[in-house]
Length: 377
Image 1 (tube, rainbow, N blue to C red):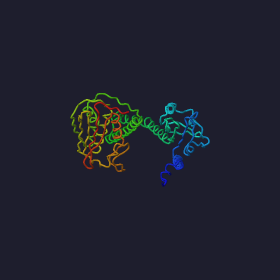
Image 2 (image 1 turned 90 degrees about the vertical axis):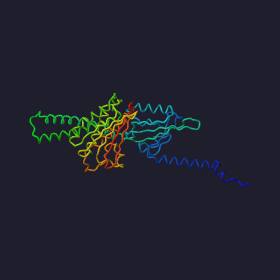
Image 3 (image 1 turned 135 degrees about the vertical axis):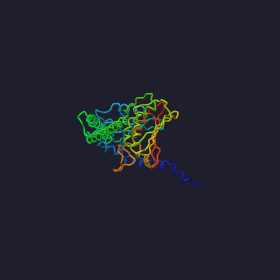
Image 4 (image 1 turned 180 degrees about the horizontal axis):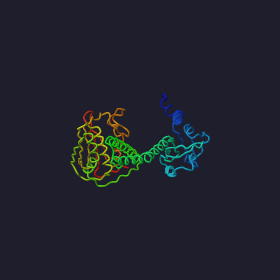
């Protein structure tokens, strides 16, 4: 009988060994080529030492391979390590579970680097943990950017908001005649200055709000609210601006059903949507504000008669600092934060927001809030 040479090649120990060696070489090359530092430890040995590290780990830390092998990963830590993060790491290793922690580590030359460490156990066929794989991601640049952003927001809060508030108050006193009679041309200039101070204050408040939302520090104050009262508050705040732009309001309050929400923040959303509608409405235009009961939700909508929004532009509307027309000749001022903040406020309520529009046919912005809030964050 002719031997089955094909089957012999597939099942021979020599063929299997060659295939295994090739597979290992491929894996090692892949790990050595990785941009992230990778170490493998052996928990079956005392102190869970490193038994393998790739080139990127040496480049990241400044240590040679001979200085790494046999050590526990804690040799990168300093006296200022975050004990809470270390506790998470220790618990994961003890329980043989994966985890991701952020650690303050130090290179061989003493330089601090922020290490986002992902750890995963490796089990053998008997379910015994025989290794841990640690993947290091240097996030020092990201941490520095976060620090600079935090400093910027602190500067905005203390170095800009306080003097702007004082400037606006002083201009108001001058405009009211507290400093003596003001000629009409000068009074108009003071009004313009007051409006611009208010616009800057609004921008500062928006930036601070956004920071609080993104860091999870914005607290909502839930209470029972009436939708008609929220609309009335927002409209009253914007009546003068609407008159100055020759725009009228039409309110269609189809329900006065009370629901649970943060009235100040919902009014802020309405203020943003109605304010945008005023900015983009033509003279003698009409803005329709509608409230409807949809069972589990209360739906608000603001419809204008402005230029509308092209379909391909609508996707970016709720991104921060994003505007439909970002050209230098854009006639309407704005920071591009209002809709982004509105979306985050609604997310915190468990609500939703959207837009229906076609270029040249006006825009309808809507948002819906649950009668019983599904609190997010």
